[in-house]
Length: 182
Length: 293
Image 1 (cartoon, chains in turn cyan, orange):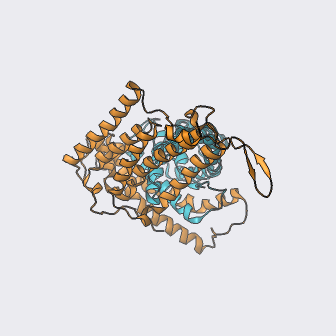
Image 2 (spheres, one colour):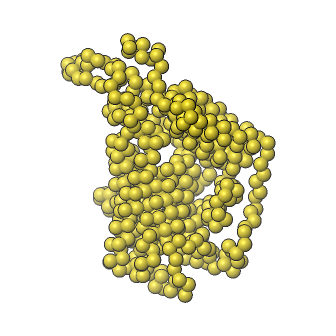
Image 3 (cartoon, helix red, strand yellow):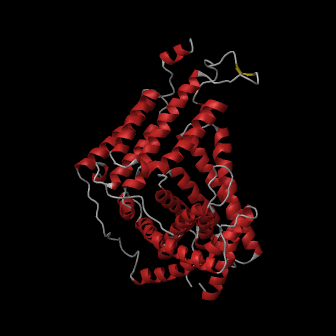
């Protein structure tokens, strides 16, 4: 069996990065259409769990590309334009949970799930933090606006979505791994 | 579920430029514009951005949705942050300044007297923010409408990204319609089993859990498909040699001109800002005269 490597970007990673990005984009668009009730202007995207899960299952690079590219594609489809720093933030939300990729064996194990949840929290905080702080540089916003206008409204829904959906996806993936021996 | 790209060929001036030159210009513009808070420079960038924007020949009805998002961002950044709360304007506007209502103001009917700390300097900063955010938005908002999604992979490869990353991008764009179709099939199948996404009962957590029967099958199915694609690519020796691409991009004279202009913007911005120390926040005299200052 081939040894797992954290920063490898071979054929498997190329394919899963692409699938992750396309899935994120499609589900983001699909759930926009489903109109889940959410607070105020906050875009509630259950699809953010996809890059986090792809990071956990296939490594940090796959998680990063799934988030970064997926956000670009969903914005391209929706016609929102190109927002590099928010794309980068979404990428980081996938990359950071991916850092535990090598240490995971059984995706159903409660300790593994808790570990993944911890890295999902760190990923959301860092990713959305980077994206929100960029507004200080691009738009000249002050720190209060960045925290209350960008950071908190982005962090809360992403955390809720990630913390609920990532374990569900991990358990479903465990069944695939077990059945196929991959 | 129908997923459509916003792009269509319009035979516009923008369509004649190579996508690599366009990315270089867009990024150079972003970095150059963010070096300035002086309205005279920002007006220059604003005019360039809208000249570029209109060269794409997009109709208002096409870009309306994107502009609504930009309008919301502008409202939060300018009206809420700079004008109403006066949250320091990112440390750009010096403290103090000429107050618009120095004596305070009284709200009629309820007779409530309060001091609204808005200054003429902050109002001028709001104009600068409008020029800067509006200009940057125009440059980036136009991209999905005017750039062919089929050339993203080869474009980023041409810009120096590794083959694997560029190919991943290409593959992602190609997967979107397939996964959208899979999602539609899963959605219909779940509905046939009595699944009701439209039910809004329950809190946020319940709502998200209700999404799982849609997300999980689509994701797991695509992971299984991914294994087959990986095997097929490995059998064709993917990654052992540099790739060739179906579409080929070639620079023409207008692309070189655009790249030269991009370099001028970026280098000009750096020299103006760091060698001449010009371009920081500045309030014109006529504006301060309005304040009686």
